[in-house]
Image (cartoon, rainbow, N blue to C red; front, side, top):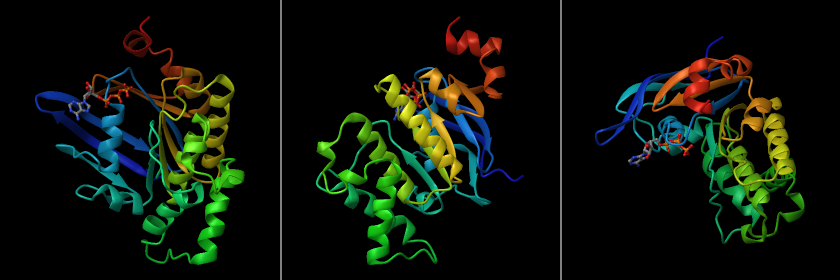
Length: 244
Ligand SMILES: Nc1ncnc2c1ncn2[C@@H]1O[C@H](COP(=O)(O)OP(=O)(O)OP(=O)(O)O)[C@@H](O)[C@H]1O
């Protein structure tokens, strides 16, 4: 099977500091990958290089049989790459429905053959909010939401762009046990609808429940990649990441 995402030999420096050092990572269509590593290991930097908000010095990113190198973040979103941020940044002056409308207008409708009009857009906005359990709040403003509802809105906004790949960056930090379960269930539902998902998370219970495969970054290098049950027993991972 051809990988949906192929990262090869990717390196990124900040001045003299090597944040990523020759990362290779393939993600297959439909997969649920957990990307883990200690604070500062380079997870967000890797996601930023994949999504085009940072430029890697060496290496390349291929996605859906196309090289993304040199494309802007917006161009990558239009090709089907979406991410949710740890700190959600909805448009504060727009309702929830209007918030999910924006990616439809600027991503879905910017694709060849992807044109949705008036009523169809309204319907799609409500469908997206329903999918994350926020339908009843469609007309409310982001300031009216709880923390978990903000995370759900963030996922709905990412899904509004109809991505092939969703990268969820710490969508569960600060949530209760039950809320973490809700977000895991939501991400698994999105995956079952055909979206490939990379989850970055520090909550190991969530990582183990969600992931079909784990990749581990330590100090800018990928030190392990494989089935979760093997990875958590890998002595190098245990030493470097779990601190045992
Ligand atoms: N814009 C930047 N300028 C300089 N250094 C940076 C920049 N962005 C990240 N770094 C450094 O690169 C390293 C990797 O950071 P990154 O945020 O990718 O780690 P992370 O694994 O996502 O960490 P966390 O789990 O805490 O979010 C860190 O040492 C960080 O300080």
